[in-house]
Length: 538
Image (cartoon, rainbow, N blue to C red):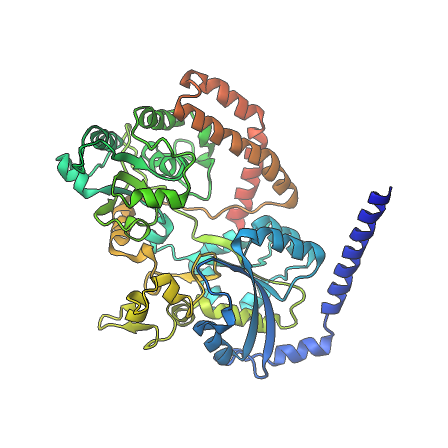
């Protein structure tokens, strides 16, 4: 009884704190009008009189410990007349801290780079904790409004089932294909040359190349220590190759469902009879020793350390040059499969983090905050955010191309590029709200070999890319329980088929089990979400 009473008291105290906190955040009509009048509709500064805001902020290990002291935020505070206090939370425990803040009611003016999932956008948006942005975007976010008009799928990806938008995203330009590919399938030119092989363009040629790497001492050290293919987990390779059988034709945002080209209907492709051949191909690679036997357990850091030995025939990561200090790799395009299918499907959703920035009901200056955020969806603000200040952190050559200064690229104190950048910018580690284009984003995806992959993939890229669908709270309950169980079971069984732990003769039994787990209801929900998605903007 005592334990039960204590729990009840704690819950009551938390609820009271939440209610008091919520009451304290409300502003009267006069204050709201005054705050609104304080906003300049265009140009800088954003506000006439200074405004202070507090943001709950996700932080990568590569970033500094005080955002306010970085060049970009110091300068932006002066330009905008808005002073932001960034309350930094490491990404490692971000979800836990964010959930705690929302549950207790002790949250700040906004969540910045806080990876708020779509389910929480719907949940806390409908409760009023996250404010509706539809009208605010229309009036105070001209840059973002223009992007939604240019890319209708951006608006579709952000609109919740209730018709409202509650967040600003991390948005990659759909034209920046190397960024959407992110982690190409790289092969080693030196090994190809020694095998007297041309670049693999089919799944059969890729198999023959991997076999050649395994059977020959291509690095000439007297032992066959080369690893034909290495990576972290088996899924990246499956996702790279399944387009050769025509699967995954709506992009990586949809892991189980695409459109059947024969019927134009939604298809749960992971149990399709033809998809069995994708798994059989992967099984052949694994059981013949063409895939690293540590593929299911190796951590990224260990993979990169192993890769520095130059023994990988093929690998998947952002870029071997930046991750493993290995030059001489080039990325493959779309491989042609046994039936002539040739689709590049390994393409991420441009709306990478829908909930990258949300404004809460504690915020007394929502108009100013929207203008503050909108600046980074225009060319001027985005260049400033990613590159810093011209003449100080970057230069522009005669062709208009931007380059970081040598203090950053060849630091005199021996700092890595990330370390040198950390005192100027805070986009390291990803998931930042903003708009990413090749002209001002200088990550590994902008290197020549990554750009070349994009050019190679372009003719075969999927024609229609869907953003992730958004679900009602009831639908979310199903997808996060039954849907998640289906996904877990599929991945476990695919791994067993690939390693030989389960015979391929069990495929029909496996498909029956997946269907028994609730695929028909899963597809009903998917169809409803798809219909809502299509209607946005009509």
